[in-house]
Amino acid sequence: MSRWQSRRRRRPAHGTGRRRCRRGVAYTAYRNLILVAGGEARETGTFPQNEAFDPATGKWTTLAPLPEARHGFGAAVLGDRVFFAGGSLKPGSGGVTDQLIVFSLP
Image: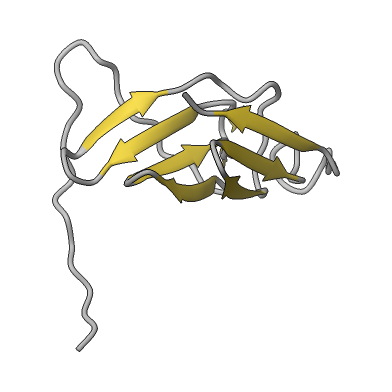
């Protein structure tokens, strides 16, 4: 039977900074990691952050940022590359783009 499980939030290790709350991110699974990129917060704009979460360890790893901050876009993995499509470059619904950008993974 299917069921939901809540995972406790873990605080970042001392000196590693604090994870930013954001919405409108793109995410996809890759090699047992969850990749999360971009997003927005009304108060601070759009974000270029690109990160990987390892569910086995509960740790985040910072990856190379997006070339332009964006939110409301999609992500898909093909081979060792992540394709990010569309989205908005400005908070809310402004600055809509049809760009397709590709991130190569090691």
